[in-house]
Length: 371
Image (cartoon, rainbow, N blue to C red; front, side, top):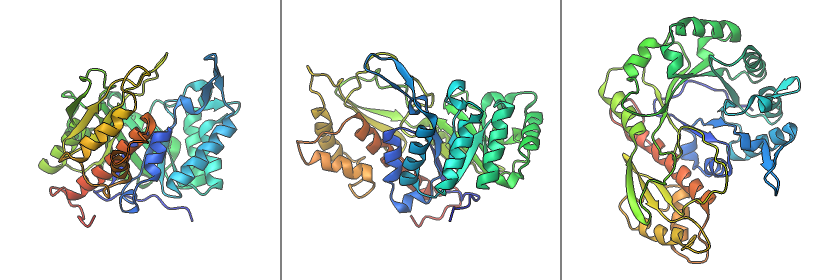
């Protein structure tokens, strides 16, 4: 039976995940005691729908095939638990195939597999896309999610725009979630008080979620062969505001895990470094390696850094998460070193587990600390 989307408890967490191998495997490997407090926001990316041939020419894949593959992956990774789905990173050419939107095709395929899909929309999506959202909602009966950005909220027509989309979707507020996506956290980000004061019908929405990210675009500015500590200002800002201020409504925490908040496609040959991203209390521990090239130390750097990490006070324990288990396993042998995908997977899996436990351990908001 398809699970029904409900109002979250204060300890819930909404990680934003782009649908790539590392992210989907990290999601599938969460312990059950952690996954029950998570509802992921999954973003489809252009790479899901294209590939390059040997000459570098871009080939657009068959959309039906992509959707079937995605739904199968999602079912194996997340089962029938509710999830948000957004396709705002896709190009118009991908979003609309003939007379059907990708969202409608996805909604129908997900229905067949009994997935609990919650479509994400926004104030600037076109009328035909909003109509697709309405169709999917009518099939899945899980409601919908409205994703807002700062420009939306500060617009002079914001309340009018909200009422317009409510009239279009014809959904009660108790079936609608709001995600306020601040994107990159910085000093200029508005306070939660200010955001709440701008949201119409604040107490009536099913869930109020505030998302932001603080992880850098890449690690190129960090010195190689060294350990770095980068502040988790997205988490710190959320924690400080929900524990020290009397807010009219406590927002659910959401972030971009250990990825940059803005999705960036890179051209040309990439030379990733053999680095480790590891989440700790108020900072990320980054073990910055050198680029993986034939004439350098190569992937053996991961095994050496795994050994160092396991002896650091930040390392949680191999039983903490599947990501931590992987780190320990690599540290204990010399044959397998892993690759950029497996290490990103380990870091994301550890991060999601760490965040759920952090939220559970907060004393300033009403959270059941049984985890």
